[in-house]
Amino acid sequence: MSPASADTPTPDSHLIIDKVTKSFGDTEVLRGVSLSVHRGITTAIVGPSGSGKTTLLRLIAGFEAPDSGTITLAGERVAGEGRWIPAHRRNVGYVAQDGALFPHLSVGQNIAFGLDKKKFAGRAAVDARVAGLLEMVSLEPGYARRRPDELSGGQQQRVALARALAREPELMLLDEPFSALDAGLRVATRKAVARTLAEAGVTTILVTHDQGEALSFADQVAVMRRGELAQIGNPFVVYTRPSDRETAEFLGDAVILDADLQGSLATCALGGIPVRRPTCQGKVHLMLRPEQIRIVPDGQIKGTVLETDFFGPEITVRLRLHPDGRGSSDLDGETITIRHWNATLAKPGSELSLRVIGEGVAFPA
Ligand SMILES: Nc1ncnc2c1ncn2[C@@H]1O[C@H](COP(=O)(O)OP(=O)(O)OP(=O)(O)O)[C@@H](O)[C@H]1O
Image (cartoon, rainbow, N blue to C red; front, side, top):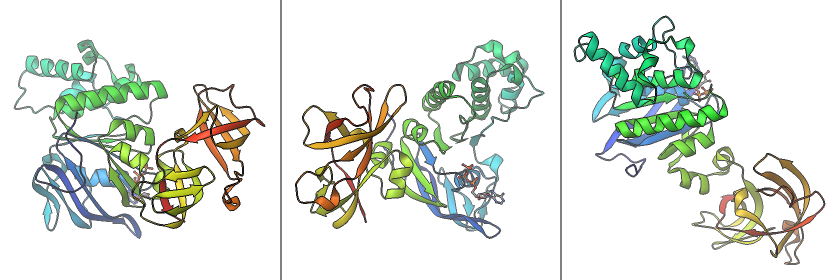
């Protein structure tokens, strides 16, 4: 298991980004970003296209300088307040979206490109190190002789990672390295890469616009929105307790209902739902994840199926909730969309009973 993640700087922080801003012309791309990353953990920066994720990664790598704010790497200020350490002296690896292997070099030569020539002098030493790096990314030594265009997309990404690892970086920056791969290969490559980096003890930052990828890959997730980090936390916490509605809806499907919150009980069309640590009262928007709403044989809450959508392992079911005689008619008749594994259970027009599992999250209405 990785060490605990945290977004507040401590003496263990490997990387500290403090109030960093960056504009290109009139466009404010980063608007005061602060993030702290412990040594050896994996952080995913997730956000919609254009939110500034790549720009932040490029600032950490040293390809761009911040307009204001500071970046500290392994205790050394590398950018900001008059300091500037160039990219090649930061001990940082970078894997871009397309891997960007040199097409005219063999796989072995691509990987050897990153090696410290003083440390690996002579053909035998280089070959042994290249073979070791190929093994780290689960490729046979024979791949060293191939050309990049003789490899699949996933293999090319693993070679790009091996090339970046050749420099023995303490910090690895991955900019959507799996996005060009198809679904199956993407998951396998992601797992292989995560394992390699964890075994090497490399602190890793992954940029992605894919919520599922961020939640599954990282010890710590940072949600980027319009040049700011909206929330930083462990994947379970950001998914189950998003800080605001936009983050909730960005990180996954959300059922949002009008509710009346008194103390820590929200009354809505799904009945009384407990809310953990509410920050507001009265009229609220209550958020539940679809998987919290279960179809049961004898639930108190009833709904009529409006439509279903079949996805293979599961179906989504849109329901209109029934008035329940609790005197809250203004909250009834709402529609919600839930998920279920059994496609035969929900047919349009049929009535289902439901039960809610766990707590909701309340946002000010
Ligand atoms: N060198 C540059 N010059 C001008 N504008 C830039 C430059 N780099 C980035 N931008 C702008 O900054 C904004 C954020 O870009 P960035 O690539 O950081 O976002 P992103 O979150 O990584 O998006 P995506 O997921 O689409 O790659 C965009 O509007 C982009 O056009």
